[in-house]
Length: 479
Ligand code: GLC
Image 1 (cartoon, protein in one colour):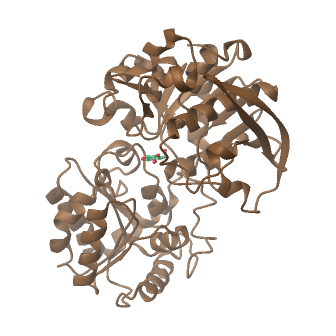
Image 2 (cartoon, helix red, strand yellow):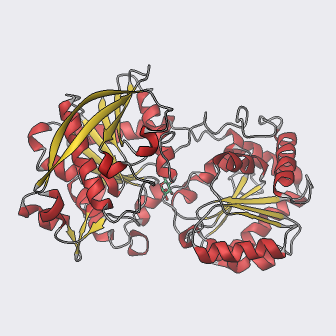
Image 3 (tube, protein in one colour):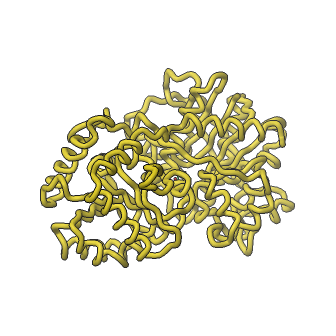
C-alpha cells in the first residue's frame, strides 16, 4: 500500500514528546511490511535545516493560496537508502525557521499552511497514496482539505486521523476560514465548535477513519471526563473511531546496546546490570551509593494531568520510607518549585532534575526499580513501556494506555506487570507504591521474576503496525 504520513514532529529530526517517538517508529515499522511504500511529511524547521547533520535534496517549489495570499512551498527529501521509507520536508522560512516548534501566536496559520502544503506536495510529486495518515491538531485540516480544495487531486485517496493528545485541538477564531484557510463558506459549520474554529473537530467529522493511541483511551474518549468537549463528536463516528495501542522502538530502547548506560545488560544479567546503573546514577546525582535501596523514578513533563499533584500530596509521607526518588523533567512552575524544595529538604532521598536530557533519562530507566506514572489520563504513554523494557516495574493509575499495557500484578499466579490504582486518588497511589515496595523488599526473587518478565514483553511496533494496516485498508475500502 502507498501511505503518506503527515505530522508536526518525528524523532530523530524534531521531538517535543511521545508524538515524535511514534512518528519515528510507526513509519519505519510500516515500511517493513511487504508491498508498502511510506512517505512521511514534516515541516522543515530551522533546527533541522541548519544543523548540518542531514543530507537533503531539493525537489522543487511552487506557491499555494492561503485565503487572499500566496505562500512559498519548497520540498526537500532526506537522502536515504531506504527506498520504502522516504522523508519529505516542507520548506517555508517564515513559518518554520523560528526558535522552537510550537507556541507562536500564529500556530494555527503555520499548520494550516503545512497541511495544504503537504497535499500540494503529494500531488506535485505524483505519489498517489491510497491513504493519508495525519496526527494531532497540526495536521487535522488535511481530511477536510482532501474533500474540498484538493478533492480533484485525490479522488481515490482516503484519510485517517489519529488523536495523540485531545487537550490541544487547534482552536482559532471564527474568522480563520475567511482570513487564512480560504475554503468555501459552507465549510464554516464543519470547522466550527462552540464559538471557535476547531481543527480537531473538523478532522473527526471528515476523516474516513479516526483512531487514537490505545484501546482503553478510545473507550474513555466517548465520555466527557476525558474528551475535552469532543465526546459527542467522537460518539457520532460510532465504530469508525477505534484505538490502536502504541509500541516503542525496541532498537532505540535496548538495555543490551544503549550507549547511555554505565553497564548494558540482558534478562539474565538484569540484577547486576541494574545495580551497576543504579550506582552510576547515584554517583552522578549525588545520592547515597546504595545498590539495595529501592529506586523510584519519573521521567515526565511536570504537568497536572501527569499526576504530579498526587505525587506532591504524598511526597512527604513517601520519603519517610527507605527509598530514593529520582525525577527528571520540566513543566509548571508550582511543581518545579515544590519538587525543588522537596529535594532541598531530603537530599539523601530525593533528586529532582529540572531538565530534559534523553541520555540521562535512559540511565534513569536502567537504574530504576519502580517507575511511577500516576497520570490522571493517558492516551497511551510510552515511558511505562520503556521502563519495563529496562526491567522496571511500573506503578500506574489504571487509565488509557496505562491500563492496556500494565495489567495488575497477581502474586499468587505471578501474572501481570505492575501495581495499579483505580481511582485518581493520592492515598490509593501511595498504597500501590507500598504494595510494590513490599514485594521488592520482602520477596526479591518474585520481584526479579516480575522484572524479567517485563523485559521480555514484546512492546515493539510489529503488531500495532499490522493493526494500522487493517485500519488503512478499512479506510481505503470506504467502510
Ligand atoms: C501523547 C500522549 C501519550 C502518547 C503519545 C504518543 O504524548 O500524551 O500518552 O503515548 O502522544 O502517542
